[in-house]
Length: 91
Image (cartoon, rainbow, N blue to C red):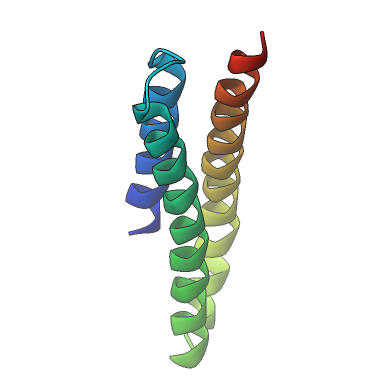
């Protein structure tokens, strides 16, 4: 679930950057992208918490290193793309 939310955040951030700066849609794209980024972090945390409660420690050891790297890439891309749209208006 968290992967789809993260990819959705990146897609909305790309739409935000590619939209004209005078459009009202860019504010909604930015809001959606940042909201999906927050939901991605929550879904990732929830997945880890469920594994701890069910005492699936081998699953945690197998998945957490890879998932944390992918999550870092998704969140970083979302932040960078949304910051480009903010600075694009100043230029």
